[in-house]
Image (cartoon, rainbow, N blue to C red):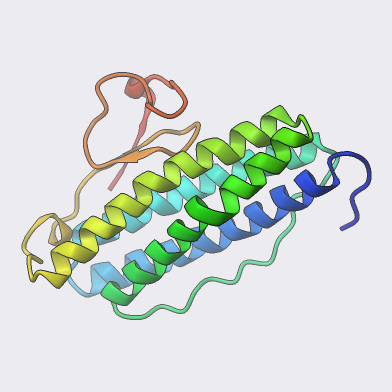
Length: 190
């Protein structure tokens, strides 16, 4: 796809982020099935919640891309499915890349091009990805310390902000800490 004008870099970044989030969503859905199969119902719930969060990110990026005159198209190429611990480590690696490299760069470039919607989309996605990384890191620690009888083995609810995809294992009492959306309107994903 060709882009022209001042939003060229931002549009390319929106498309790259859109592709990345679609791939993550597909991967996390497959990882959820594997976790359930291996008896890690809590991790299945976590992967389903983060898959929903990645869908929210891709929807936000597609909307910003369309408003920039682009078209949201991508080929979905999920990660290979391994054992649940390996899937968690792959997911954490992907989230860490988004937090430390991809989204900071994309947000900086969008801000420089004065593309407020893309800047907001990238910044909010980055903040939400931090919650995903924390949840994945906690799950890895639980499994590696042989505490599989903890929350990782029993299906549970996760709370996802439908605006920015902030994700919590606890019900949020006030507004979303990332975007301010009312907590009582969060989606519950099990």
